[in-house]
Length: 120
Image (cartoon, rainbow, N blue to C red; front, side, top):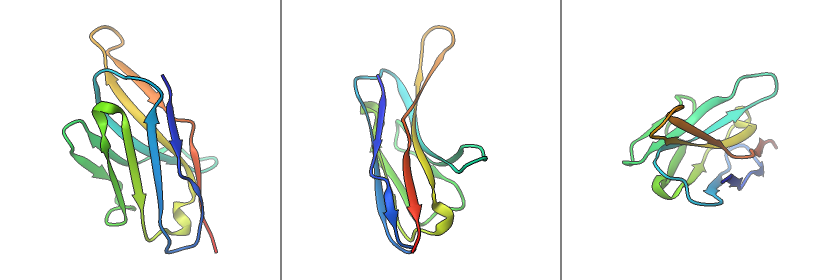
């Protein structure tokens, strides 16, 4: 099973973009999903996450601009991004965290990444 992310592209500052992520098959016991982003030579940072019960959290830098939504049980999420800034330019990755009933207790799934470029 793979996560497939889409929706990246080039957008002007102040614009909007929506990213989507879906699993190619069924993933059992996903307890949360998230979007991360990474710029060259830096670590991958959490942007937003959503739990199976619908709780959400955001990085301070994107609060009030980005909205995460979706159906975690179906491993399908979206990230609506508004008021984009040049600092939002990065490769965005979706992530799914699934619980196992045996070691190693957690199965991690990463999407392939989608480039978001904010530039005039």
